[in-house]
Image 1 (tube, rainbow, N blue to C red):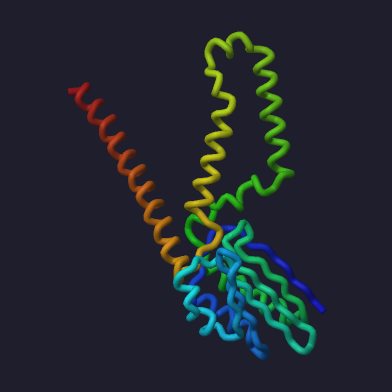
Image 2 (image 1 turned 45 degrees about the horizontal axis):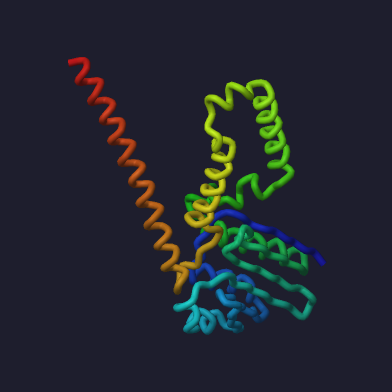
Length: 231
């Protein structure tokens, strides 16, 4: 038996068509169990994708995760989980090597087609989720702060506000919260999930638009001030 496992991070938008194609890849000669998990520990399950997607809960309740699982008589099985968590997709495939490799390629091609343009901004892709990278950097910064405080204590107490040391932590925490809201790991483009996705995108585009207009106006003001001084 050959086994493949993988965790995919980033930001993705999963549509009904994408789910149908993934189920089709799994259901070549076997049934597929579809489990949809909602907020409030509610869930539905079916072996038919159309029945699962047409359930009334899908249109009125936000989906937390969708799990696809299939088993064959030869001991082969596949388990795929799509969820709005740092691990946008996780899968485990086990069976004949040729079948596993072909299925893995199909699943990754489908899922990568759902990647959003701001995927690189998703906080789950940042070093915060890799402590062996973060901790040395944090220790280095703390060491530099202690050295600076020891050598320039008097000057720092006179010229730097008392809240300055905690300001970077507050800004970093706020940035992480905003990243998690605006750049979720996975959104479902149907039912209540689609409404949530559109709400986030409207706010995000408004912020980007405001920053863009502000930058243009600022540059225009600077250019106009310089031109008036020349004339």
